[in-house]
Length: 250
Ligand code: SF4
Image 1 (cartoon, protein in one colour):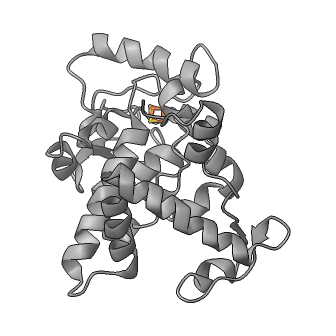
Image 2: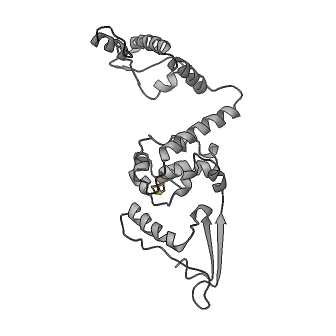
Image 3: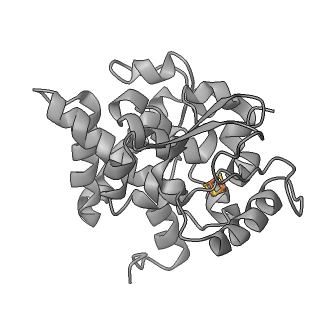
């Protein structure tokens, strides 16, 4: 009815929806309903080629919308998101979407594809939480009929968000300092082993297998949840014990 009743029909379409020929449409007409609801064909596809005197709309306008799509296309790591045919298969399998629902994404496109598309169309800063709204389980990648590697794009957008936030600040955030320190520790096996040994001291704060209160700034974490207590013995110690004193790397 939306298409046949109005005198003037205005259709707004993203530029990534253009396909070369009617023959290519055949592929998508099968791919979309089968990936979405398992139907062989959907009941809502309409085709029209312009105005016909005395039948349907008498004026027809097609608006091709860019709205950030050209910028997304310029990003080699993110442009695959433009392949999306909006079938919703990734939404149906996403454990995060299943629990939060569509409105939580705060954008037109919810679910895994929304988490990679919205930041690219309207800016990472405007959608800063979306690239993190995923456990990176990869279920969306498994079901996507056009094989969009959503988990990799999510990680790419997280990196973009961190870099853009760092550029916007004069002094590094506490998180950036903590990550730089972790990177320094993990770059050396000796430093990593020493850090593991010193983490054992955290066992002093243990109460029934958990740490319920940590000193500032880590108290921000324990204010809302418990922290797991470090094990009494590290994996390396266990390995050495089990393998007659040999190091796990030998
Ligand atoms: S990303 Fe893939 S699975 Fe998700 S809606 Fe788009 S085409 Fe479907």
